[in-house]
Image (cartoon, rainbow, N blue to C red; front, side, top):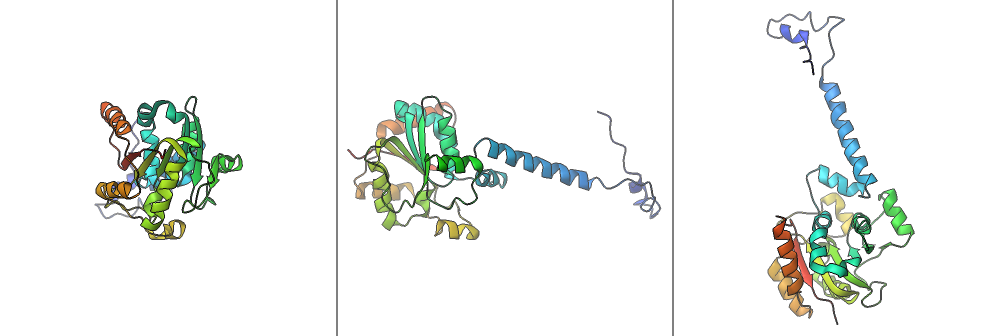
Length: 258
């Protein structure tokens, strides 16, 4: 590629002459093409994420350098498959931006997937609206009983949503998620110290996120008569370690109610 000639007006910057700046044939500043190039790249990336079934919210959060535990579920799916095997054939995901997770799971072979979106869906993309229209994704307040029979799904995965629930509602919601699962419940939650919802988002989530420690969750499982799934934990950790994967969120594997 030939090298672009320099801007002739710059030659006069040190000499004090202004003739080059007002010359009718002087070239425009290269700042505008650079800005247009960056803007075009942002639009292309946003379009790519929407076209692949990922909501605009998730695409925007990645561009800003943020992350959510729901986006972390995308990365964990291969290791969840190795940990749960055939149980990954009938999955319910619960949490914000569930449409992106459901869309990814539906692309897996011999996998049925459903989702529960606990929050506002006014700004979702066309793909998400289609999943809601078909009944694959439901919009429901998870502080109340889910509209499913016991053991309706082999595996239930919940991400982010539990970080916005008070202990009062967690005591009901987590056992309810275990009730509708047959082979296990996977809880993907943030680490203490990781900020989540901004002030502008509080109207959507209802309260600031509360990140709880692993010891807090251990006590919670005992208090609610839930048991951690040691076999699934071992398989998941082995699969993740062999591939060098380390989650940016806490992942708990809990047994279903029998």
